[in-house]
Length: 325
Ligand SMILES: Cc1ncc(C[n+]2csc(CCOP(=O)(O)OP(=O)(O)O)c2C)c(N)n1
Image (tube, rainbow, N blue to C red; front, side, top):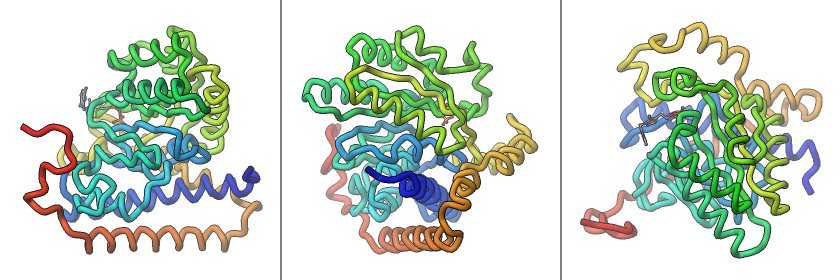
């Protein structure tokens, strides 16, 4: 059992690692050092941290197109995650997956997914497998608010409920599905209200406060471990950057959400600032500053590791992939 202070520190460390990792990745991407396409998790760190801290390697997580935070919170090695984003052969998927399709099954990271709500059937299947295997491992299925209108959401939640699967579905409601406010696409405000239609508990929580997220997730995870079935959590959060990296350059800022709204969220609802406030008076400031320096050093080391790693050889292009033409 970890005590409360240790848990709080772990939550803070995880959220800050995500923030600093993402800042570095977005900077590298903007300078053309990373290939492909990427979606920043900045602003949403309390959700992945609050949900995943305390999970076991045998617990599964399925992610989304915005999944670096889930990967870090699930304990993936930073060097190998960074190398994956660089497309290097030392990456968690040997450079084949990149920003949206990383996985590390040994750590229970069952994969990012470029298809909106595409991870949910995988999460549901993984939960069924865990139930059939016995034991008390569980699965988390992350999705964005846009995912609640996909057929896969309905089919997955219905099956999870009727089979009483050990799973927690976590909607990260950052309010904007690409460039549309979610209420332009969805008829209800509280997305956890959907849970009633499947016969499972649903709860909406402040997704910017890592302790609030952690408490809700813990309750749902423990329920799943006891064999009492699935829960739907809506974590109400906010993304501080564009839908995808480069959006501001292409579209400009303030086109589908106001600059004031973004600034207010950054100033008043920054999950890192809120998490640090929980540490005040509990952990000395110097220790918290030291943690930040340790994380920054680990991220620089990850960049160096990735840049020193080789790209896969061209003749290996079809190795380790399931289908080829
Ligand atoms: C099935 C499917 N339809 C459309 C897209 C294009 N697309 C990529 S991300 C995205 C928005 C996703 O919004 P949400 O699920 O709320 O996640 P967020 O980007 O807000 O984190 C869309 C429509 C896709 N990838 N998959």
